[in-house]
Structure formats: structure tokens, C-alpha cells
Image 1 (cartoon, one colour):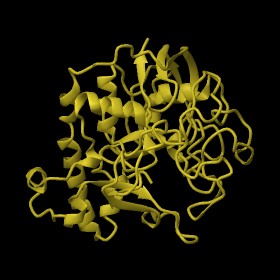
Image 2: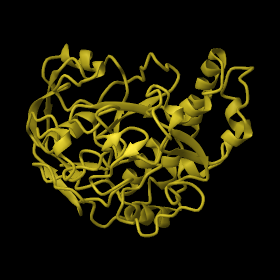
Image 3: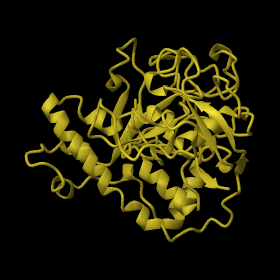
Length: 358
């Protein structure tokens, strides 16, 4: 997971082509930045604090909390957070529908890619991707028939033409009967556009971790009960990923928001269900820089994108894990777990929630 469109379109390319295509993905991200201009002056939400809760301020240790922690969860560092408001749950299909109806907004996944516009921003000689890649679509998870290499995301992620928030599994699927499920297939710019319309913003990564922790140092938003005893606490993958889901929590995909108990701050779905976008750019060095400053107050992340694995793909932080997370794969439901994904990319397990200044 994590690198969306770039990962999928680069599967069959040699290394030189992958590097060239990285520039294309970066340019695609730049081309989407005008979306926020479409809705900046169309705030119609009469009360942005409806369905929000005030998160108290506090100082905490941010970063890896267990032996499962990944290298980019370190070093631990002290962070001070002022009080802020946060959505009780992920933005639902019903709420996102209100936004698109009011503004006419079209998500990135619903738009064909105009190669003539993009290629002028790229180095000469950049190869044109296959025409089917330039069609509107998004990433859809499909179970494999058996064990696969967990480093090869293409085994279960499939670029699906016609997949978007209204058709989460692609053509023929619908959100009918799922209006209370979290909206998915939203790229960073889509989430940011919604937040502007709602007179809110996306949370910072530090705000998100503090909110998920409920003011504790517990491993999970629900406490420290081991994951095998947590099927009634969050929506995640039980069984063997990515081919055998026991569905002991009752959901093989997304669950309606607020289906599981809240954390100590009263927030729902801070673990599992869908990954959630944060404001912060992904920079593998950001935690070390923050630690060098002592106790840092209300950090907003790095001012640069920095992922040595894919240096040309601008990525933002996502948090919380999803219905696909499993102990053998990503353990994204841990409070300190962080992932990054290309800002232009969406999938059927990525959504968001909003925050607002106090």
C-alpha cells in the first residue's frame, strides 16, 4: 500500500522509466492544486462544530510505542498540543455527498488525465503511459487466491477504471445502503477541498496521534488489549492477509462510522476502517529534527517531501490503519503507526476526518 497510482503504473516499467514516471506523478499532483480554488468561497456549512468534539491540550511523547514500531516512528520526541476540535468520526458518504452537491466538486479519481497538459511539465523524452492508465480510476483491493510476497503490492491492489467514491469497487458498484460508511477514493486534494468548504482543516499528524491516544500512552486507541481480543473494538483484517479474512468483526470492507466503541476522548474509528489523511508532508527525517528542538509546540510537519524510496513522489501522512490492516502486514491500528502515500492517489481504504482550531 502507500504509493498509489505511482506503484501501479510502474509495475511493468524498467528502472529508468520508473524514475521518469515519478516526474509525471509529481506534475499530476501539481495540476490538481487548483481544485481548492473551486470551492474556497463556497462555505455553506451552517455550523462546522456539529459532530465535532473538543480535544483537550496536553504534552505527550510522540513516536514508536512498541517493538512493532517501524524505523520512521523514531526517535520518540516530546510534543505539546493546544486544544482543538476534531470530527467524531471519518467523513461519511452522506457528508461528502452534501459537499459535492453544494459545490459541483469532482474528485481526482473521477477525472481523466490530460497528457497534453501534463507532458509540458516533464523532462523531454518522458514516455507516455498506456492510454488505460490515463483514464479516470482508482485503486481497488482484491483478495489473492493464496499466499503472496507481501512486498509486492500489485498482487492485491488493482488500478480500476471507473472506481471512485460513488463506485467504490468500480463500475457496477454503488454506495447505496452505505451512506453512513466513510467516503473512500479521496486523494489529499479532495480531502483538503472538503475541509475548506466545511470551514475546517485536516489535522496535523501530531494532533492525530494525540487524539488517537486519548491522552494515554497505550499501544492502541482502545487500550492495550492484544489484537486477537479486539474484534469488537475496531474494523481490521482477521486471518491471513491478503487471502483469508475471517471477518470476525462483522465487516469484510468498510463499516458504518461509529460501529465500534469510542476512545477515551470520545472519538470513533481512530483504529481501522479507513486510513486518514493528515496535513503533514512525509519526511523521513522529520522526527529527528523535531527531537533536536526539545519540546515542540503544535508541529505542522516538514516543509519538504522526503522519501528516499521514491524521491519524486510528493507524499502526505496517513494515519489509523484500515479494514485491511493485520499483524502480519502493517499493524496500522497502532497509535504511533504512520504511513505515507502520494497526494494524488486514492484507494478504497483511504478516507479522512477534519479538525478545527479552538
